[in-house]
Image 1 (cartoon, rainbow over the protein chains, first blue to last red):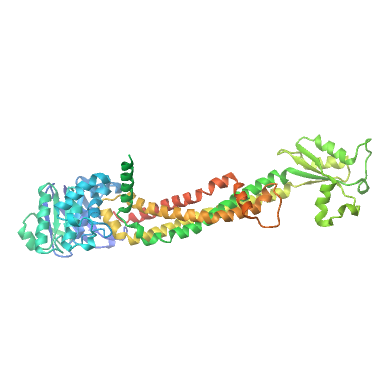
Image 2 (image 1 turned 90 degrees about the horizontal axis):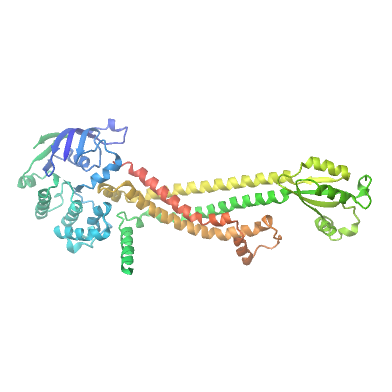
Length: 225
Length: 323
């Protein structure tokens, strides 16, 4: 599913990249299909940068990163959108589209994938029921609580049944009850065969749901397993 | 059947409304139709100018450029060689002209026509002044007409003092002027199109800047460059097309006035001192060259096309920043 070999990442415009510091250095790890990994490390360790790489929002500036058999560094630009559509991403700040309703936010990935309007309603309705948001389907995100918005973000991330699900501090804006409910959803997705990577610095959460982890410190992988 | 059609329209409307970008309220589009309307107005005038210049040049070339004027002075004003019985100097010249290859028409001007020509200079009593007016013959030549200097020499030999005036040189100059005007008008048209494309690109960048976060979300969800660029391009195309229609609507009355004013120069219509009235303006629209009639509606279509392509280019260039 994920194969990283000596992966490095620098930010900056091309040409100026050589001057920028490397935020990820020589990362090498494998995550099999259907696997679970916590992504741990203090702030600034490189968790979000690694998630950007795994979400194909950046390409490695060094080494080789394969996602679902696609070499992200070498792939043609036009081959990346289909790859992204097989990856679900849940952000700490949700990143919902404010002018769309809950229904339309969740339907967005299906529409981007070319699903006909008549064929997506049943799937979106079922997904909203699964995350307990059926009653707010026609509301805008700004009218929802943080927990509800987070569930919309999760519904949007999993509606396409992704092969890889990434979550960046997904419980950061949630109370304990909401956080537990979210973890149940993520574990359910993992049980159904989705590879799940969850970045967090909430060690209590990790202790309550133990599992294999990738631990970063100053851009380097210091623990795998 | 009707229900299915209604559902299809509703789905299309829904897709348009839910393009995910909320472009309807993006700031870049609001002034775009107004600016493009101004550009389309100028483009329509430039187009009409180019067509008008071409039409004038063609008319001059086929009219005055294909004629000669031959003046035969009266015997008192020029020495007269022996004349055959019953044959005047004018008849000799006309006979010679009619027998010359490359000449398609020979028409001696009547006394009344000569008086009309002289009236602006000599007044209405020109006939009573007893001036020794020359006989004048209007000659029409074919496109591969005769050698003018050689013809002039032969006419001079037949009727000494005969003057042969060819309109070719100044018509050629007018033709060159018309072609130059046409090129200038086409260059202006190209410039207007380029400026419009630039403005549309700037407006698209402004709209893009206001929707940057949403674009990045869609990009992350797997939207292709075409999907994002197409949404912007359709919106830009619609705004530019609307501006094009408004600009064309404003330009048509102006084109009608110019066409009415230019009508006597490209046809046999008399020149009126008064400005054309509504009926004449409507008639002048009907007399517009077919090429212009076909090309004017192309202004809003071109504006919409330029809007689509310019927005596509602007968005795709911006999306190149993303992986």
